[in-house]
Image (cartoon, rainbow, N blue to C red):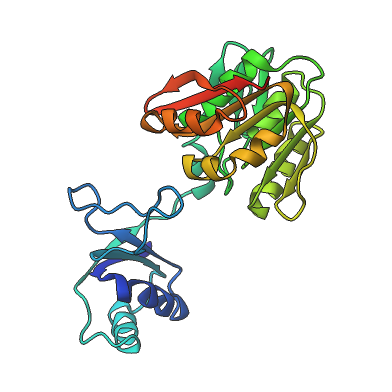
Length: 296
């Protein structure tokens, strides 16, 4: 018999406490999902900073994984009593067969062709084109595997604008993919900064994996200086707030590229940045745009 995957419904106020109690009681994992996902009542939880004021779902589904021999009924009764539920919620159980989870996860990530000469390749894959510039990058906790339209837009912009020996700052570097790509495309001095220490650690590991010498720092180590190229692939809200800081790092005659911007947000971002440099749409993918300009 495989592991037991148990699913049941609850509300937002009880979902997190129930998960905590189940984990303490021996559950291997416990997650909370939107029970209305895929319907008109679906409630998004992840957007731009400040866009969600009441976290959690009124109709929550908990999915918990237990050992094959676990007494699910007893554990649910114990957890329900511990958090003050009047009874045990109705639950279903499915068997989860043993699998090669590493192999299964790796099978979901294939090499990504950015252009004729640039590929993003997971470390376990053979190089699809050894003669191309191959960025070796493993999926991890930091944003930036190359699959998102905004990352692709920035990589395409870098291919058009990086020149030998130029300096580059990746503002909000995530996995470091943009800084690493710039270095592989010929940039000289390359740096990146992110508020997330885990992202900085991932970027440093990825740079080492690609044989790239780059400086990555978090917000506790402020980045100084001006650069030939600055790229910021974050979201519209932080781009609004950080406009003075980002533009201060673009040298006179230098270039700036911004992404993480939806089509309908482009005009507002262009207006905000106009006091420092003019921006225009440099690329569009799906509902996302890349804005770029030169600082006079």
